[in-house]
Amino acid sequence: MNDSPIIKLFVVGFPKPFIKCVYKAHWITLTSHPQFNGKKDTNNRIQYSYCLSLGEAALKGNTIVSVHNLTKRFGNIIALDKLSLRMDYGVFGLIGPNGAGKTTLLRILLGLIEADGGSSIVLEQDTATHSFEIRQRIGVLHERPTYPSSLTVGHFLKRVSNLYETSEDIDILLKRVELLNAKERRIRALSAGMHQKLGIAQALIGKPELVFLDEPTSNLDVMARVDLLRTIRDVHRNEGVSFCIISHVLSELERVCDNVAFINKGKTVVQGPIQEIINEYSSNQYNVVVSDPHILCKDLQTINDVMHVEVTGAKTLTIMVTTNNPKQLRTDIERCARLKGVNVYEMEKSHSLEQAFVEVMRNG
Ligand SMILES: Nc1ncnc2c1ncn2[C@@H]1O[C@H](COP(=O)(O)OP(=O)(O)O)[C@@H](O)[C@H]1O
Ligand SMILES: [Mg+2]
Image 1 (cartoon, rainbow, N blue to C red):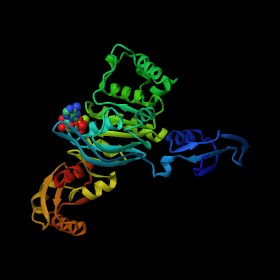
Image 2 (image 1 turned 30 degrees about the horizontal axis):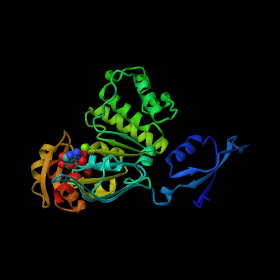
Image 3 (image 1 turned 120 degrees about the horizontal axis):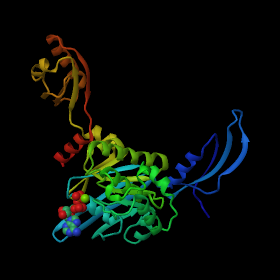
Image 4 (image 1 turned 120 degrees about the vertical axis):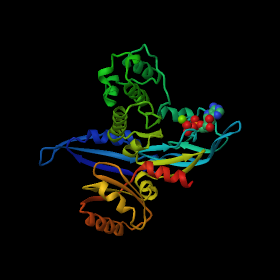
């Protein structure tokens, strides 16, 4: 007997992609087959009715991973030191410097190694006792993966699909990661970006609810990084698959993640929605666009609260201040600019995940 709340959905038009997306998210499960009503509304659109029931994860606020006081030692090295964190449904960024414990955490979540203490739950199942069941429901792209280089992309994915005993449509899989035109290419002939996309494609085999990607952009050039992260975002948006991206390339994570955690020396330093963290921890730095930054640069140093001024572009100055009063700062800058005959076009606080990270690490 299923006592989850039931949602009755009545929709018009062509709702299949929507239903597919909701269904694949797994936090809402379709309990009855879609019933085609066959009627048309006044705009000649076909009407459908569906019956959905909320899955367990939805009832628990969409938490997909929760880790409590996790500890792991390798001899004298403490890789994880009572680490606690929570990942919600969406795209999650696990950020930390080299040696912070990111890969160790991943290996425990996958059940590849055992923790010395604490607990970890993935998709509502305990990693210590249910790693087999968890692995059926997740996908992984490991750090520095190697694939059989003499196989073609299509052949390799077919083999992985057979291993999972799923009849995956390889063409659709390759389309999802924009790699269909490389299907007949041998793996050794792929570019670094294509290689990582192949890694995402193999991680998506078996319709996982959650995919872990360990440093997926580390050896890619800027264009390939942007492209790969867009692919990840699209797969999440279109199909509801959650991702955990482990990385230290912060500027790119900013564009793709909903929530992040900073970890350092085996501990979680800060975690939460990305915008909240950026707003809270970004230092007091402003970007000011003016008609002539060089003329103004020295004078701005004399303003109270201004610590440092730098010309950072043909029309921009970056100013570090101690004040939390941007109104007064703007008035002071405009006064200086007027005296020098310089126009101020724009002034805004510069927010970035990178700045927030530096600030958090400096203080903690
Ligand atoms: N198998 C291992 N044997 C000994 N030390 C290890 C092992 N795996 C990881 N470590 C150590 O644990 C710490 C965390 O490593 P890791 O989780 O790989 O960090 P990250 O992925 O954040 O760079 C590091 O000091 C690393 O040297
Ligand atoms: Mg690592």
